[in-house]
Amino acid sequence: MIIANDSLPEIPSKRYFTIGEVSELCDVKPHVLRYWEQEFAILKPVKRRGNRRYYQQKDVILVRRIRNLLYEQGYTISGARVQLDALLNSSEAHSTSAQSTQTLREVVAELELIVTSLKP
Image 1 (cartoon, rainbow, N blue to C red):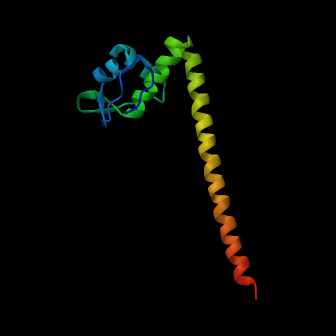
Image 2 (cartoon, rainbow, N blue to C red; image 1 turned 180 degrees about the vertical axis):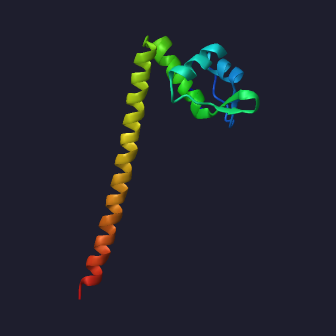
Image 3 (tube, rainbow, N blue to C red; image 1 turned 45 degrees about the vertical axis):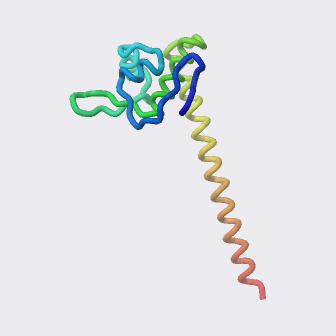
């Protein structure tokens, strides 16, 4: 279970949440969630039969981040969008850096094996 804000309830460990559940978990009205889907391209809940929205846990966490940026930190929609993009780009850069480090370690290990096999 994850807590994003002390005033908000814990996020249950479920696979999918309805818009009503997300509304309660994030203290945001359902029409606001639908509006945010239009404004933040990254917020894309799964849509099933009858165009019903089903949010995943990562979506609920994202809604809480958006809520925090808008309601608690005072950002505008465009400012919050910029902050989220910066956050995502930094986490992607960190992920790429970790992958590069792992690849370098593998290459070094292979080179060490080659060097030891070439020694008489």
